[in-house]
Length: 409
Image 1: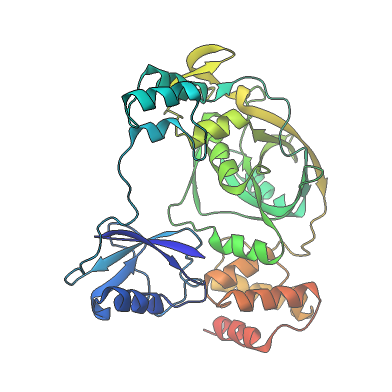
Image 2: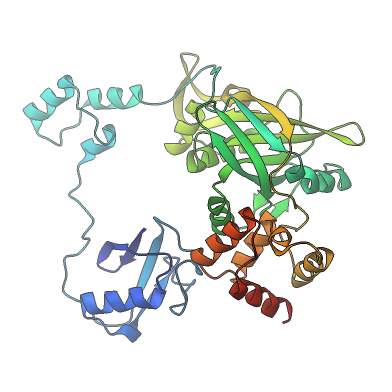
């Protein structure tokens, strides 16, 4: 995988493996740029507060492909080209997408006035590429099947609190790209703060462990479910539209948002939506603006809404309804909580004492917890435990020893 390392001289790419130790990467940098090994350190943030442990692997430190790291240098910097990944400024680049052929009319202007000349024609060309808001009947996801076991704990908590706050959970499963159908098999609830009008996912939440466990089972993040007292006329509010567009761009075109609302005293209603292509493009172009009106989405500049320029649009114009059907999850256990303690794992193993080893560990949240706690140390161990579960085999002895060591702390 590739990571980008930023330092006082600019940036450079590093081709690394998730099993590489951070210390070995520092060692390579030290040799390449002739800097003392003890004078350089890697950090996650540009403020240089969140230091990466050089004794741990990139997998242990949750470093993923494409991530940006920051190099602190407490020594004299080597004489190398500054800003190696920068290029001369050319304002005309903002008007064209990568690989886009320059229209002949604009090319004539550049030939006559110079390669960096900008006229009103360039701005007209840019405006033509802006998203246009209109009705969208079809979406990538034609239907979503939801393993009802994956939502039981989430729904029960919503009932206990009377759906008094907004709450979110991420959904994992498989995608049938030919039929346009997705199937939810399990879920993972992030650390969050819940309010009567919105929720806020904790800044410390890292979804990488859940994504790695999902990938080992051939799954991916395919949606999120939000529980709240919904207005039937406005199932998704303004902030949900923005969030759904963000995740749909991040996790792929099949990402679907479920809305879980109460129906009577003991039942829930589940409806599903995808966000329109226009909303995804607006999010990607960073054109969403702040709004206190939960029924309207505002933009940073005027966009065309049904052919007329406007700074806002009704939230429902960004929704595509998706068919929902409840089914059974392929995971036999959903009892382990998303935010557990040491007592929870001991209780889980005790409650399932007489089950086969593979069945004890066939719980998505349990495996995510073991990865988070580094009981499962690397991808090889994760793949081996998943292979044992799927083939109903005895788990690797070294992993069972790690689990026993952890639970006997």
